[in-house]
Image 1: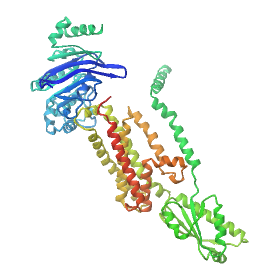
Image 2 (image 1 turned 180 degrees about the vertical axis):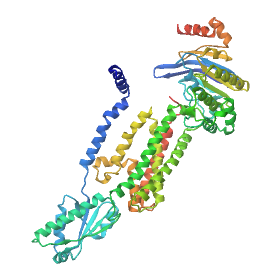
Image 3 (image 1 turned 120 degrees about the vertical axis):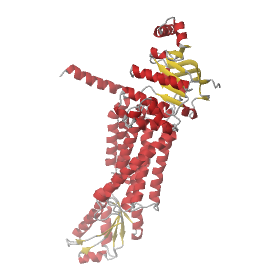
Image 4 (image 1 turned 90 degrees about the horizontal axis):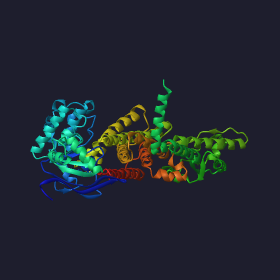
Length: 238
Length: 366
């Protein structure tokens, strides 16, 4: 166990039926780092994140989160998880949703702060079913960070939100990382990848490449991250 | 109107069903099961109530009428002694017993017979044939006795219920429980399924919540709703419908709470086996209809064919319904061992379902 790492994934494999969703993935994420998981749809990003919160159990290999071998319920109180779809209770108000997730994580006092961080405090009385997609994403993020997790897992957090809000989200992520929160964010949007400190490229359940955006550009032989990514992905395919 | 577009909708619909084996099974297998069950119940049930006959007549007439009753198709008669009668009504082995008093033959001479008819009384449908059979037996005997007109004035007593006890009183007790059971079950299964389909269950599983906490929290929430509903249903049944009630309202309420508990946990447990609300709704005919048919609400369990009785004996609703009837019709309280048994069985089902629900609620998705 190493205190320097928030997440250690060692040679993890997972199959569903005959389909290999993860195939010997190994990666390390340092504390306070923003790590981007990049890859096309169906590459295994969500499957990997689900291993990190113990929703899936690896067929082979080990997953260690904040020094604890997963699955482990006790460590989950220090982890925030924002699922791909905004998983909220549509009949409850914004505030009631955040209060609920605060309560199950034992952080009842953090509600106001979380609502302010996602700029929803003024809309706290609105019922979630009446909100726009972007506001739901913000509410969902508030639910994920209300208990000040040490590790924040964001599964495509900016899908369906406008560029303005996306910039705000990333500012928030950077602030949290500076405060010591480790953030793992999955995406297939390349301009987001540039904001991560390190990237892992996933395809066909394998970790193809790892490195800073600059290193990925160099390896892919292109100044454009998207082109670099496609070139690396093409190599993985052959 | 475009035939092509209409056909597209029709085809899409049938294509979807082709992959949904469960819905197909429901459409084509469930009706056979339900109708078969109903047919077996109605054809196979022994409908003639058991009637005990105590002949204390010092003259000859009692024996003649008793003999005639033995051949009656309306009842199935056995000889008993009058002293055992009440006990046999209480333990349910007899629906009624008839006593021919020692001066029965003399009464007939005087032209006015009054045999004692002791009815169990909790099932109105089983009382009528007893009096009918007795009347028929007496008139045939009277006809043989050279057309002398004999007045028939049976002295009827009821162990439970009474003259005004009607079908609603009999069914009401069972339905008060059933309504709560059914609605709570449906609400729970759909709510729990929502939790799954809107993705919040995944979030709960990725939190420090333990499975038992989720099941218990759900149970308490729905039990609160169910208790309010029970109170409302009960008040309506007693105050507006004036359903016959001999028992304590508190005991009835406690029994309903217990049924709600079973319904909530059955809903949580079964929601694990449904992928969509559509599939959840399919549990209603599969889970609720057979229970309604077999739990004794409509057809008394004791009159069912033996094979079905075994099935009835393993359904929680059988005990719940029996308990509710014992309380409301017979005025049972917790000092009755039969009610204690019902309560214990329903509670045991509740606990078993809590354990089952907690176990099937896997923390991992696969």
